[in-house]
Structure formats: C-alpha cells, structure tokens
Length: 218
Ligand SMILES: C[S@@+](CC[C@H](N)C(=O)[O-])C[C@H]1O[C@@H](n2cnc3c(N)ncnc32)[C@H](O)[C@@H]1O
Image (cartoon, rainbow, N blue to C red):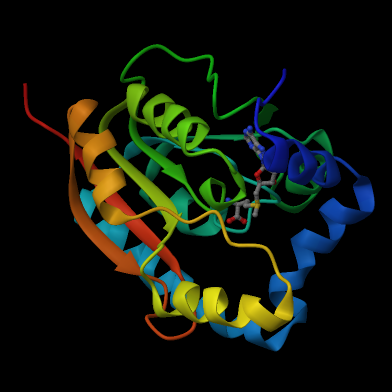
C-alpha cells in the first residue's frame, strides 16, 4: 500500500515498529507539556463533536493510533470503526480498548461514499509533505462522510508556526507541513463541504486546529 509521500512514508514506517507504537501510546501521559496539551485537545474535540450534534452516530476514527481519542468518541457513537496504517499501533489499541479495528490507509478507505455520519481524523495531515497528497487525503475522508468531518490541520498562519519559521534560522529544524485555512476551505467547497468551525487546540502553544466540515444539504 504505497503512500506516495516521502515524509509520510518515513513517519508511517517508524510507527510500524513495536517500541515506537508503545512510546506513542504512553507519551501523552508521560510528558507534562503533552498532558497540558491533551487537556486543551479534549476540550476542542468535545466542542467539535457538540457542533456536529452527534449522539448516536456512525463514526470512523482514522488514524486511530493507540486509541487516545477513543474514550471521547465512544459516547457519541452507535458504531465506532477505528483504522490505522500501523499494525503495531493497532496491537496497542486492541490491548488498551479491546475494540475492533483494522489496518488501512486514509488515502484509500474501503467504504462506500457517505458511509459514516462523522469521520474523525486527528494528527495525520501535518505528516504529509506534499500539498497534493494532503488534498487527496482530505478528499478521501470527505468522500465517506455523509454529514461531518472533524480533521486537524497544522495552521500555516498560527503563532507557533510563525515562531518555528523564525527560529529555523538557527535551530536547523525542518518546516512543518502546514496548510492555510483558505486551502482547506477551497478543497472542502470542491467536495461539497463548508467549514463550520475552526477550533485551535491552543492559540499560543499549538498550531493544530480542529476543523469541523459540514456536507452541504442536497
Ligand atoms: C500522530 S498519530 C495520531 C493518532 C491518533 N489520531 C491520535 O491523535 O492519537 C498518527 C498515526 O497515523 C498513522 N498513519 C500514518 N500514515 C497513515 C495512513 N496513510 N493511513 C492511516 N493511518 C496512517 C500512524 O500509524 C499513526 O498511528
């Protein structure tokens, strides 16, 4: 299953190793700044789910990783389907949640158009280097959503990204794979969606924004 994106191939390859999967599963509890970020993230996710009005919805979580977000999605789901590219992540997922999940790629999901009420997709887009592949991914998750998509984008215009770009002059870090809201709006519009909300995880400390996309009424 080629991903056709250099950075994502490297990232996804690393996540296929057992110890990297274990490490990802626990780092949000281990590291203080991650615990703080998790607090703000849970708040943004609850707000995003409230906007969709989901109470007993069919929900796809892709990528589900080790199931960090599963406890927030279960209460609003009549059926929650969890998918990730990494079998190692899914082994951790099964051990922690005992719920069904399957190996698959967010670029090529084995579901009919509009198969789910809500498609939830956190923390994948910023691993995709190519803008064209990021658009492919966004179109695929919208294709299978009947009503709503909740997706995170690392905002090109966020304070965090601007500071990173300045500090790159001496830190040597690579640019983040960021996207502008206008790009997302255009891709969403072409797929028949509009942006219902953009909820930053934290305006000061993070560039991640949870976007809520709504399918236009037919
Ligand atoms: C940063 S984790 C996020 C997991 C989860 N959404 C969360 O917030 O905890 C990114 C996940 O994307 C998965 N992944 C990488 N490429 C993928 C692809 N093409 N399709 C589905 N999952 C992919 C990795 O295996 C990893 O579990």
